[in-house]
Image (cartoon, rainbow, N blue to C red; front, side):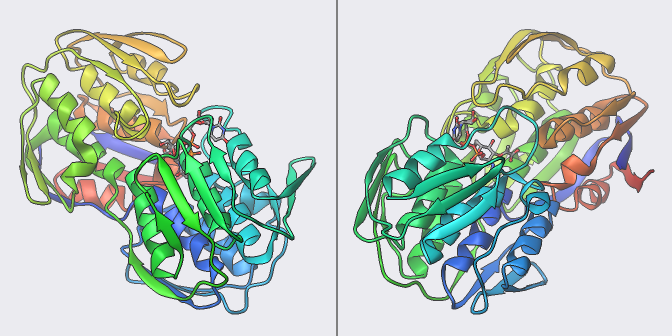
Length: 418
Ligand code: EPU
């Protein structure tokens, strides 16, 4: 287990550079298996979820070379075999091998994916899409066997604008016969990044980034090159760090238009910041106003920033209300914030924050990736020493977080404990 130790209450100054988006790269890497050509992915973040994907890709026969922020994937020797349970369970994004293997081989055998325990995380919408494309689905315990000798286009209406289902259906549909239309598709910026790669590989896709995506199947895809978009969640997390502890902190490499919901909320809370091109300048906010935050699908307030922004709610004057609408179990950080001095009354997916409250260091435990990030933010703000157990969760999605925060003046270290 890894433990993060923070001596808090330091003002952070300097520049934090944002890396490539986790939720893009975890789909772009499997997408490389849709061709026997070479796919080069630039701006690849150094996160543990990416490492887990590489293990699966290598097991399937891909040659993956990761060097200085790029991944070069040669899939000419890829063979179709069962993605084993221990690897599938390492991360949520292992479900992308279903769509990719189905597209390329019309047959896939994959175990249920893993990932943070933030809700029941069903994959029924993925399966509904595959089934509409002509796939016969057999479940054997936690293993899915997907068979589609005649993979064909279909009109699919998702019950919920699921990010994973939208991407997975695109993966299968690009190599299906005929036209597929995904309605109520997710509109997240990562989907546009993934569609861009597929189009560069020769796929025919229209409407990515809107709620209707049209895919005309092609026979074969070829190699291509893509850059991973900047991670809007990493950027948002460090922007909130700036609002809590910044002394003219600069968060650079940001695409501001991807973070409108966060900026809108910061305006609401009277938090001042300045945007100059891809840089956001932000300092510790005084007189933070209470606000209500409800997470929504893009372009609403992102669920993945829901936990980090709750640390800012502890500093707002008056009562703030938080409501999580995407995941049913994303409030694991709350008891730990309470232990650190926050005044929170939480029930299921809602929480009322009464502030402002001073936070103090405690020994606490990360329960998931973004909840763990929220505890880091709380530790940076708190007086005294904060010890965060199970910090491995945080490394799934925040590249070099210790180095990035140390560089701007945080007193933070990570160690392996038994
Ligand atoms: N859902 C279903 N059935 C499905 C698929 C989803 O009921 O077949 C439900 C989920 O249970 C959840 C909601 O729909 O309640 C949203 O799920 P979605 O499919 O959109 O999420 P995902 O693709 O599994 C991705 C990110 C998450 C992020 C969500 C929402 C990856 C690997 N994960 O998950 O990222 O929260 O989209 O934006 O891309 C994170 O980065 O911390 C994280 C959890």
